[in-house]
Length: 373
Length: 228
Image 1 (cartoon, rainbow over the protein chains, first blue to last red):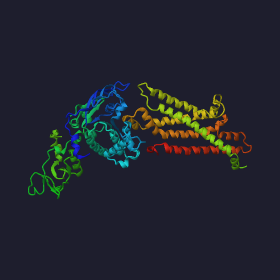
Image 2 (image 1 turned 30 degrees about the horizontal axis):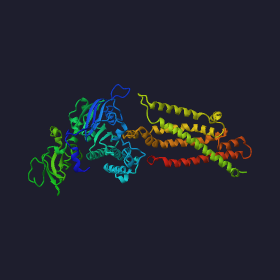
Image 3 (image 1 turned 60 degrees about the vertical axis):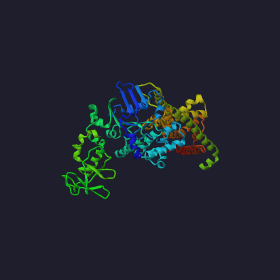
């Protein structure tokens, strides 16, 4: 949650010696009476602290794979290792108490208060009452629900989004290193879902869990995933970073699955800070010059308020829209469309213009800068 | 002698029979519900895997068989069932309790099974995912969530039992049936109609007492989070 610690946990360069937390070795699931494996010969490793999104059409084996990690579904063959320990044959109930598990709509127990819902795993693990209560308050706080308001309520008194937050809190209760999430935001309205996703990323920056996350929503996979695993009929077709999956699909299946929206989705991976922007001048410096550089008029604190000069354009008739440099090209496109502006001023934390992004750059300039994302 | 005089004069007998009626229903419903709920719990904790033979296959068999059997018992006319048990349990309380117990089985078993098997799948799945074993799931999740439905079954079966208990008088079972049977057999004679009237009205009083009792039990035993 705190801005200062964000970077250290998440932005570790890939493959920088992070040990694999979840390892699947030759894992296979053939349901009794079926000849077709639901999951066949799957090898997959999830490094510590990463979010891996399992995605694919229905019946592709993504949920089966997730549920084999905590052995809700017993694999027919292969080995499952958690933190280097073979858990293929340990007691399933014991194992599941050490792995967080979140499902659609939280699956909260309707007859338990919110605090008791969060406390179920600690209670099974034999924590004392005082500690369970304290932990519940701590987690309610973490997921953005005021403990004094919510701890004694019942699930039906909460909205879908709030229930989902409690579901996440419950999974985190005993501080498990691994979390499994089965379409947790699937039944939530788009606006709330978007906010929950942001909060989820915030929480993950604090807790740094190893997370396997099933989704059918590519947008969600791109937004949340450190890696995406694309499944088709029981096989892992591609397992890579979101950018690679979108730009270099491994085969026709992945390419079809990623579909026509790939280019647009990729915009949310392009950070403005990594782009070369067009220069911009503020009014006092460039009062006399009428060259090819756009000029903005700023207010007292240096924030752009309007365009003074646009080379080859109508400065007075163009709306001034800005986007923070911490955002992505997706955000820039969003504000341009929203403000009906053909260009956007990229501003720093103090709100001062750092550069300009043109609508035309999207189809011209950006295309040559793949590597910078 | 008017009805009120009749009641006052015979208050001791009437009160005794009312108490007996209440108790015989309470005992039969208690035993029948205990049997049905325990049986229901034993056979409703899982779904049989269609491709593998397991306990759940037996459980499902017992469950469905039990429902058909107890339903069949419920359709046997009560007069006949009391008579059929006479050679085995004789005249009196035992036969009345045994037959009444048999009549309570179907409704409670049906509601227990329905309540336990219709608990939200998502709740059970998340319980499993958090490390709840089968028994813990059954007793701490399924049973409390099914409880309102089970309690309703017990309540319905109690009301039915109150009227069936009247028939128990033919085998000299305790309760208001004695008053009614007596009144009917002497119909036309002095006070015979008052006997019938008193028996009927006091059955309603017994029912009202049970209703109040169940309202309190409901209030006390249904978890707050699922109370309507």
